[in-house]
Image (cartoon, rainbow over all chains, first blue to last red; front, side):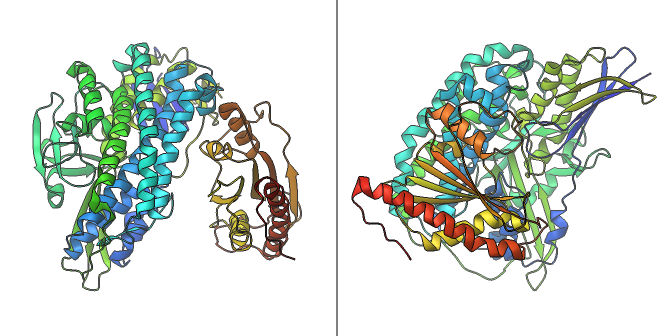
Amino acid sequence: MSNTLVIEPITRIEGHAKITIQLDEQGAVTGTQFHVTQVRGFEQIAAGRPFREMPALMARICGICPVAHLIAGSKACDEILAVRIPPTATKLRRILNLAQIIQSHALSFFYLSAPDLLLGMDADPAQRHVIGLANADPELARGGIRLRQFGQQVIERLAGERIHPAWVIPGGVTAPLTSELRQEILGEIPEVKALAQNALDVFKRVLPNFAMEIESFANFPTMFMGLVGSDGALEYYDGLLRLVDADGNVVQSAIAPEAYEDYIAETLEPHTYLKSPYYRPLGYPEGIYRVGPLARLHIAERCGTPLADAELNVFRDIPADQRRSGFYYHYARLIEVLHGIEKMEILLDDPDILNKRVQASASPNNQEGVGIAEAPRGTLIHHYQIDEHGLITAANLIIATGHNNPALEKGITQVAQRFVDGNQLTEGALNRVEAVVRAFDPCLSCSTHAIGQMPLDIRLVAGDGQLVDRVMR
Amino acid sequence: MPSPKILVIGIGNPLRGDDGVGQGVIKALRADVQSCFVKYRDVFQLLPEHAADLAEVSHVIFVDACVEGRPGTVTRHKFQSVLQAPTRAIGHHLSPDWLLWACQSWYGRSPEAVLYTVSGCDFDHQESLSPPVISAVPVATHLIKQELQSLLSQQSQYTGLNVHRDA
């Protein structure tokens, strides 16, 4: 008689999802499924809207990373206009995107995952949240709060709103940077840089405590995908898509945005609303790949900033077969925070950043456009088609969490098989199943996230519907 | 320029009817009471990072909607020192007492705090407030304005600044 174990909701993630774990008669895990239970339909909502509305409209998809949608949407519209936006506007968009990556990574690491990392996977769930973290290590928690605040404040000061700013528009941005704001942000850089370095030091110190997790959190071989710059450096805004295999060999070196459909296809699984993209030439599921911080550090040759490059070299001392573990998403996230701060400083130090020309204007010159940017969680693709009146006839969005979906689901199975015993459920084992999800930092509906004590009800139900075991918190 | 010493935070979602009253009151106050000592914020919900904002001020005034009471009722609640973590569970946002406790616990200090609530009756998807809550906005604004003027008078004793008082 087989059993099914359901974890619902998964706590400390962005959005709502549940996991079902199938057990055999001996209580061993035979399979898992990751269910995203909401349908949002933004691609349908877009139909018939004027294309210039798309960046602001699509930014509503997400309350955590609206800036990424704003930027990818604006880039797609730039392509429809066929304009080359002023260089200063590109730099300002880059700063905004970096600010978002910093705040989102700080949220993921400090608020959602650090309680597991600092307090332990088996710690009392009543304490295993950001408040508990603050009690255990106030300096680290204050640093995390400050890093998130910094990123959010840069967005707010630059773009007018922390959430859903409308400053990025097709053709550029609506207003230039003032010298006062530039100095304000530059004045804060040394403080936040030190905080990011401290967080990396703390993380590296606790890393040896997680050998079991490192060897079982999605450490299987997959390809990695993301944008890289023309010089092979880490890139979030421009560049071309690169795919490398698990050993670091380049599979595709430079996919142009407009050619993405030749290489990426999507399939649907019946148990979830989240699509499963894959590398078209290999088919599904052989063509699964990962995106996001860990992928970016695998595909890029270097970060391109001194402190982050030094940290990247330390990271690359880890043997290649271990370095691909999904647990290292946390590590990659912190390196990216440091890089983001350094890169922001470089961009702000550029005298051209105060240039007042930040907008180009044009009428539609193309009937379709593809915009690709790196969101905190990975590659974000917006593809719009318009009619002769400039109204959207088709929109296709591939979000970072979608790219990661097949690997995430496989990772859940791996962790469940390693830690879950159907005959004796333990809170720590189930937390590890959730923790592998948190490592990927999926953003499922962008609407909610939890701090610690969400109602968690895990039931072990026999094939005949009889309740075998139940854990609640 | 001196840094703000009083933080006024309007809490709520203006797309959910009466839940937006906190932000509505902030909008009215912004137009009415301007001082370098007062900082206004409107937020959908209180989050851990707001503890850092609280740690920088001597007084905080929260303005929020409330589901209890007769619609349009304005209530003032003064918080006592929060020395222990509130006992109720935390979800995806924090309550003012949680935030005050977090501020004290993490930064070693917390501001004097009051909460003004306006009882609402319609929290459906809409951008407008219900009639009783619309009527309550000037009432809440006036009460908070009086409180701000009183606090600003205390500030002026320290700074020698003259604070403009409306009738």
